[in-house]
Length: 458
Ligand SMILES: Cc1cc2nc3c(=O)[nH]c(=O)nc-3n(C[C@H](O)[C@H](O)[C@H](O)COP(=O)(O)OP(=O)(O)OC[C@H]3O[C@@H](n4cnc5c(N)ncnc54)[C@H](O)[C@@H]3O)c2cc1C
Image 1 (tube, rainbow, N blue to C red):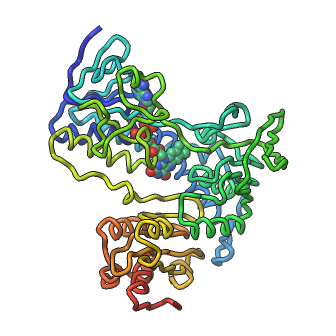
Image 2 (cartoon, rainbow, N blue to C red):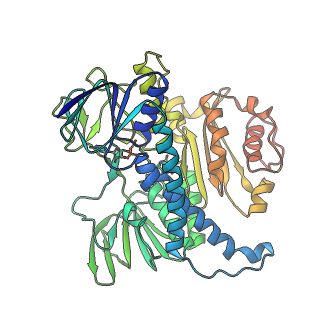
Image 3 (cartoon, rainbow, N blue to C red):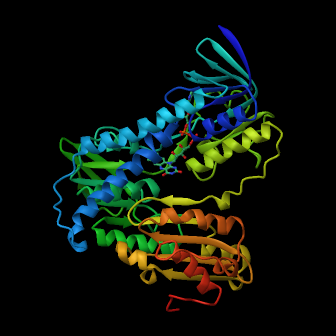
């Protein structure tokens, strides 16, 4: 049994935790980073990176299937799932090695083991106690299920879905949010029959309704079936598949059902409540400076209510490290966090939707403009449809950018600068966008909203 003292002790080595560790070390602090599994957390091992690798394989499959349209003779054979997984794992392994090397090169003590709070600023790992001047909680999240819906067998979560070494012939995806539509997209490209069941009235219900509608149209065209505004009532498993019942009385049959109904905070049994940390339904509550009710105890990432995204976790980790070092960083604006859904077609958005902007500023004070990718040369070359929708405050800045179309995720960088720097469409209209790029569509949309459309019909 031993005591170890550090400036900063961090529980969880995922996006939030390791970012806090790296920035704290840069700022000259001694750091203990406690991780029970592997540095990199959900994002690197079971989330962002492996799913995007699968989506890339899916894109390659689609390209081969469409090759004839572009005058290329190629024949689609089949998906070799073990080989797809090998490619995916090679990416994850390389990034993991890089991250391990990076963390190892800093003044960071990585503690391999399961931690639990033994005091307000002490984490116990086995017989060792890690005492911090400051403590950062970053224990992440897990795949949630619905009450009474047991995971197991043919009813799987995204973790299991990533382990499959075959392509199911027929899948039901419960949940039409980000994770659900990404897996639906992957499996469809790989040749599966897919049906999404979503209780809310639309797919990706957190996006601007125009984007949801466009995704539904695109999915319909891709042969991805979906049922929205329909609630799941139960599932039965048999030897070869599942029978899913809906509250409408309808039943659906498939080989597997993926449960993608969101992620819950991983905080149970970690001693947070016992040490007096204020919680709400398992989430750790913080002020806008990410400090809990206990001075010197902070929280980052998916355990803090809000968008569960890796880049939010990184930024929160950096913020906390700077706060601890007394740098007084600017509060993170949650509304300015960019969101990308990497299905085909992709969705990318930042800032307020039209409805939220009208709610906040009044319907008469908000204008919108939708630039159709039909007018964008590069989009036509790539064969994608979609649009860029801008929301602006009249005589004021751009409040939101909402995009759908192949590869639009890569456009979010400029969109988030525009929204976060509160640019006016007139400012952006003077900036030159290279031709022919998809990025040009952002320039064109702003030209139009500034009253001087170029390649736009309206
Ligand atoms: C399928 C899927 C796809 C996703 N795709 C994207 C995407 O494309 N883009 C994006 O931005 N986000 C994506 N996300 C979300 C992203 O992965 C999370 O927002 C991010 O990982 C949260 O970081 P975190 O640090 O809060 O938690 P985590 O990354 O979950 O890290 C928490 C870490 O704490 C460790 N830990 C937990 N308890 C203990 C303990 N008691 N002792 C020691 N260690 C412990 C865990 O092992 C884990 O490594 C995706 C998630 C999933 C599931």
